[in-house]
Image (tube, rainbow, N blue to C red; front, side, top):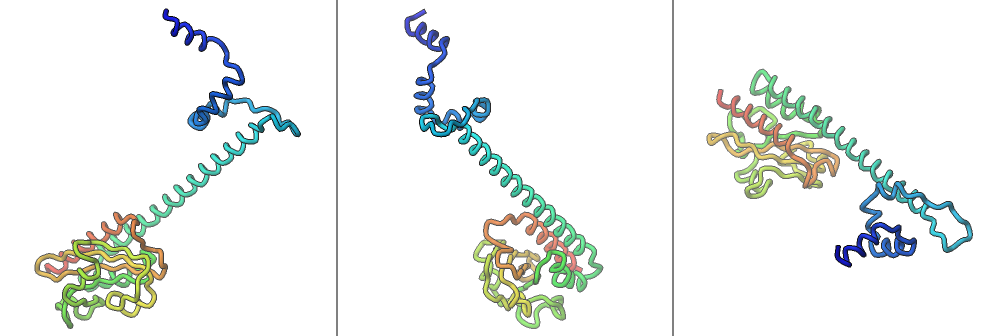
Length: 238
């Protein structure tokens, strides 16, 4: 055994002094932070009133543990709230899909989109917009479908974009018609109806400014719009 190994073995074998422990913790204050189990096993001193030399470690440990408990409780509450909201949204999307699938005809299907979906999704307006000159294609006439000028879908969504979420939007009369005054936030999703039909989009509007916002998850909304897109293609092919 070398002299260095002998010194290291002797240092491990003996119990470090209080001064050595204090010096070590001053050099490595992250030890207790990174080892919460060790902190929990420490025996805090009794509180000594009037003795400025005795650190109130007990108070420090309780404050720290209390803060950790509050942080975990807040995190748990946020996760539960998000989970409940996601489940509620999934239920609404599933109900909307079923309503669209159960439509017995094209006119009833279009009515379901613009009249039933707002109630199912707890929104103020849902609009189907198509690029066409008035009076528009035959299947548009007599329905609540909104007509956009040529290139209108691209102007609203932006080049190459399939979905747009806006936290605050100005009055969108071209999309929501009489309901435009109510809408404060909206979601616009591009629809591909096939090469024989003009560009289109489905718009969802809410009076709540923050109902839709950039960065929001769009998987369920995209799923609903893909279902609508495929059903509309089927109805237009008949």
